Length: 354
Ligand SMILES: [Zn+2]
Ligand SMILES: [Zn+2]
Image 1 (cartoon, rainbow, N blue to C red):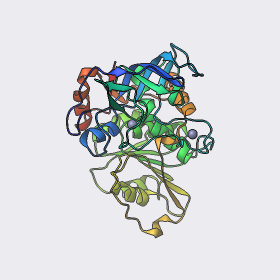
Image 2 (image 1 turned 60 degrees about the horizontal axis):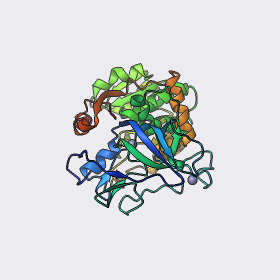
Image 3 (image 1 turned 135 degrees about the horizontal axis):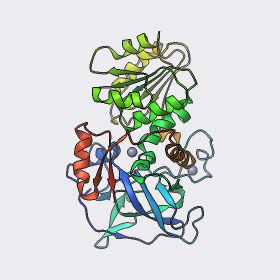
Image 4 (image 1 turned 90 degrees about the vertical axis):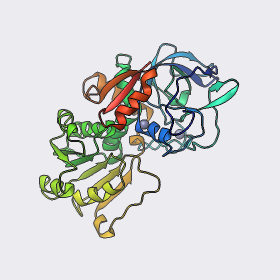
């Protein structure tokens, strides 16, 4: 990305050799996530130029002298959340929001990429819109080599975020009523995790009625068209008084209010914010609505590297379905057309095969 508002450009860059603790990865596939789109439109700002992309699967091509845990030929996911293994959050058992994670996109930092001797930035230490990348070993997840890279790449961010929000952040109880608002890759991950957790009913909500069939195939028991009537009333009706859990996966602050109205009041209900909401948006909530209700936000589904590896195994074993989520596969020089498919709502998830 050279400039916000402009299409991505495919260019040849110089890639630095891996340092002692780094791994060079030859990427095989990368998903197109909405977060990258936010940098492209300028809704989120990053020092430019930058190599975007953070949903990759690849093969280790070279390891630094001090790297342990992976060797050349291993199938890996470069994961945007590092796992240093020693900070309080890595060791917490309930989150991964590692203290070493770099989330200041406007300050220059180390990048393996350069062009004519000048640095080209990397995204969150992974930069997967590339044939090759160099990643610190704390950001490399060794995964099941039987996985189709063109599907498993969704587990580097979007689908893992949805699964983790249900299983790690909320720890959904068997038999509880779950609502998922927003059925992109994140929401469809949440629907599947709710099914795995034994939730019932599972209500899937989207403005696009075209998502109804896929939601049902992945485990939703009900679909609610958000464009047709009072969503909260429909949820209260189906759940006989309100849901136990709501997952806001669309990234819209106004949906938090809808979700609260749809939850079972006073009875241990939980609202989990999952989608990335524009930075300036506020919540308007009546404190009386919060009696007995927990509101929290989930970052990357609190997923540690070990969770990502486990979710890849679940996909390989058929417990979760990614083929319903990846609707289009394109080549690297078609990446802008891939984002057009996302913007139009035609695609659930688009993957670039490298
Ligand atoms: Zn850490
Ligand atoms: Zn993402």
